[in-house]
Amino acid sequence: MPVLKSWRNELALPRRALTFEGPGDQTIGAFAFPHDMSLRLTIPFLLLSAILNACVDRGQDAGIPDGNSPTLTLDQIDQQIIAQPGNAALFAKRARFQEARDSLAAALKDWKRAVAIDSTQAEWRIGLGDLYFRKVEFQRAEEQFMKAIKLAPDSTEARLKMAEIRLLKKDYPEAMRWTNDALRLDQENPRAYFIKGWIHRQAGDTTLAISSYHTAVERDPKYYDAYIALGLIHSAKGDPLALEFYNTALDLRPNSVEAWYARGMYCQEQGLDSLAIASYAKIKEIDPKNATAWYNTGYVMLQHQQRYLDARIEFEKAIILLPNYANAYYNLGLTYEFEDQLNSAKAAYKQALVLQPDMDLAAEGLDRLQRRGVPMTK
Image (cartoon, rainbow, N blue to C red; front, side):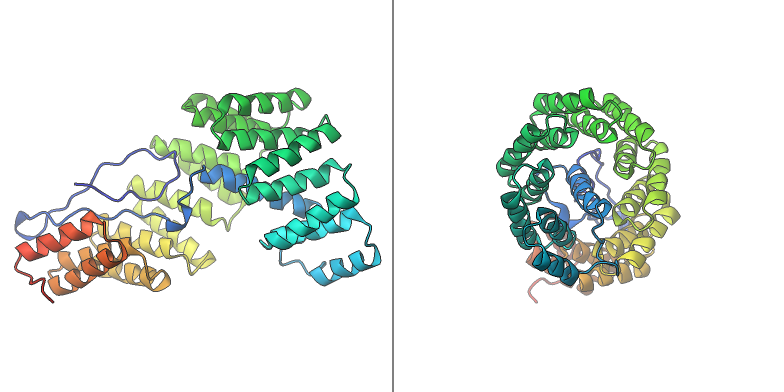
C-alpha cells in the first residue's frame, strides 16, 4: 500500500509501506509520514542551508550583530554612513546587517553601492555574489565571484563559491576542479573538504563523502554542517553513529531545529520512541509554531504506540498551526477510524482531500468507511 514519505533530505533511503489491521482483520490503511512542507526545493537543502549559514556567519565575524545584539543598530550604521558617505566598508557593513534580517532588497542596494565606491575590493564582489546566490541568480553570482578571483588570485573563498554553484548545477567535475584549486592554495581549508564530501555524495560515492566530511571536522572540530551531513549519511544506513553525530552537532548548536529534527527522525525510524518524542519536544520549546514537530510526535504515538487520543491531540495542534496540513488531517482521520469514530474519520479524510485532491490515502480511507456502512452523501 502506498505511503506518503516522511520528510528527509535526499540522503534518506526508501521506506517500506506500513499497513495496520483494524477490527475484524480489516486493513485500515497506511499512515501519512511526517514531512516538512516548506522544504520542497530542487537543490540540496542541507548544502544550501550550510552556504547561507556561512554567509551570515561571515557577517557576524566581521562585527555584524546577529539580530539580538545591543551593541550596534541599523540607525547607528546609518549615522556612520551619513558621516562618511564615501566609505564602501560601511555600506558593506549595512548590507550584511540587512542580510542577517533577510532584508535582501536593501542589502542588494548596499552591496552595489559598496562596489560602485570601490570596485577593486574582492570582498565586496564576494558579498554581492553571495547575495545573488541567496536569490538563486547563479549567473550573476558567478560573474561576481569570477571578478573577485581576478582581483584576488589567491582567494580560496571565491573558488569555493564557484564550486558550490557548479555543485548545485550538478556539474560535478567542474565543482571538484574548483574545490581542488582552492585546496592547492590552502590544504587545511575545512570548507573545501565539506564541499568535496557533497560532490562525492551527489555522485553516489558515500564512502568518499564520509572520508571528506571526516577530514572537514578534523580540520575544524566545530564544523556543525559536516556533523549534520555525517549524521544524515549514517542515518540513511541505520547506523547508530548517526546519533553521535547529531548529538555533537547539538553540542555546537543546542537550539538548532534542523539538528533536533534530524535526531528525532533517526530515533523514530530506529524505534527509539522516547528519544524521538523528546527531540520533537525540544523543537516545540525552540519554535512553538513548528507544525511538523507536533505532527511527528503524533505520528510516533500513532504508528509505534497506538496512543490514539494522544496522537489526535498532536495532529489537531499541527492543524491549528498549519491549517492546510493535509497529512495531519489524514492521520487525524486514522486516529478516529482506529477507535470506530467513523463519522469523525470521514470528516477528516474529506478535509484532507479538499486540501490535496490527489491524496490516494484519503480516498482509500473514505472507501474503507463506505464499505463499513458509513454514508458518503453528507
